Image 1: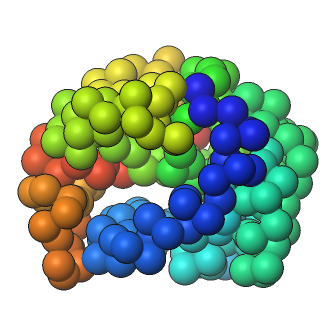
Image 2: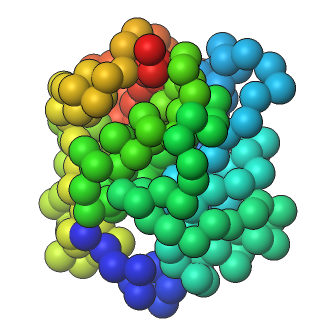
Length: 212
């Protein structure tokens, strides 16, 4: 996995990706927003591994976890409260939140443990939402092919939809709902894409599941 030091050192490169790929970024935000909009209003939630707050900010999430100090500093400037901790050991009491968002599962050391921790801190009927690059689609395959030249993706672990589905179900989540975006070559995208239901076409997939 990419270390915290990697993100501390290359935070400007991380930020530049969003500036260089605004339509891809906004397409991903739109897919995640679609999942959040289906939840009840006036609810509380966190993002885990929120980086510099590029997703928390437009999605209205005010709190979360980011172990990289340099990333967290950027997120704090965007108005997000950062708690010290990791995805595998969330510094929160049980039954506390209505939703937990992940958009960086490929960088986690133990995804199974992170999903279990999300289940612990969620209230009954709370939702976990995961946005990820489907290992079987083109963008993840491109990153895998270039991993030896990447500061971030050299040790990333990509997941298939089937694998994450099994992890969610084994943790006790039910009612999984998927959508997808980033259709075609990422470098060719010049307009924001509307997400489609399901998976199997888009490189970026979101899944929402409920704690019963």
